[in-house]
Image (tube, rainbow, N blue to C red; front, side, top):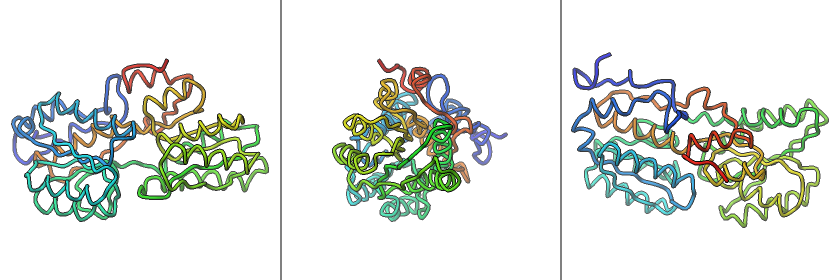
Length: 339
């Protein structure tokens, strides 16, 4: 395989099995060290704009912290902008990055549709753009192939396995705005739960309850309402992130024996698994996502052609974090274990 230092840049040989946890940080098989070495001044002299939706969520902060760590590790200048969940602010920040002439942009967008014009303007100006979630209508050159439908299927099957031999009445806690990946997760859940409910009198799926606001009070209050109105519910699947914590808080307030499952993980969520408030999580690791974004934008800055969307390793998509293995996962991902 010809390196980026000879002939047309091509660093396909540095792509391994895909994103997932190693015993330190980041992805399995993505060789950032060699990529930066091959690029030389193209890397160490680069300026990358990091555009983030907001920094209130722990997952978002972990993602940003990993990028900052990578910038320091490789001596690459990062320009960080926080859109504070405002698409107009995000567009203005993207325009400033284009005018500044940054070498590349990593975008954690506020909304995949409203982000399209700003992404396309940057790409048309010759600036590579990598998105940490898919923006399929845009000209972004690379993103994460998040396999969210498959992740939803995996979680639903794990829930069925946990309740094998017992009656199950399940409900999904979801937010039906902005993120197409959440719709994919819910579709994955339902592709398993609906047929299972149709095939068994012991399984009932009550569809999803939707939260239109993101405050902990909204999630916790809605959880209490749902459990009060549906006494048979004994499992709730949160479609993403920290709402699993808020859902678990609602369960605690009712005093009911209800299993809480979720997708994504940060240290606070790991602590709740350790405490037994969250039953299990399918991790969508912020550090792995950040490393994949960094790796891809560097390849594009280097002039690599047809950089593929980065993938999660198959074994990573089948990880299931419970009280039994949360310490091991947390040490690998966060460098410390829950108390």
